[in-house]
Amino acid sequence: MRAYHLAHHGEPALPHQADTFPLERFADKVDFSAWSAAFAADAVRLGLMQGIEDRKFAPKDAVTRAQAAAVIERLLDALNWMS
Image (cartoon, rainbow, N blue to C red; front, side, top):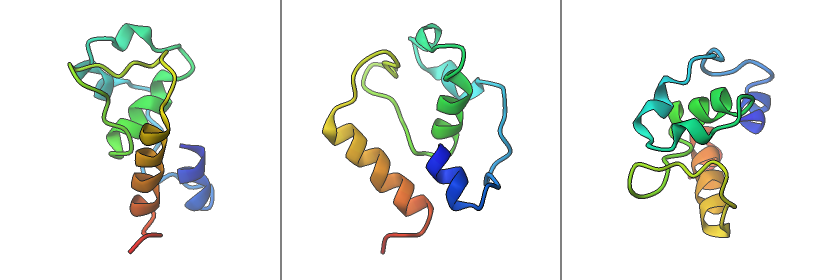
């Protein structure tokens, strides 16, 4: 999310929302750390992250290279930096 906000010259495309409503669809929503939930909700809201199978987000799991690459690709696409 920091890269997304920085690319918009410090102005977020969506106002930062403290609510975590986008996380409600995930069965493991209670596993988010207090500091990370709003940022994860923003990433879901912007379509950068979608979670994994079985309605899970797995916020405490390690990220694979493929998952990181998918998020980076979505970020670059959201910023119109890819054709």
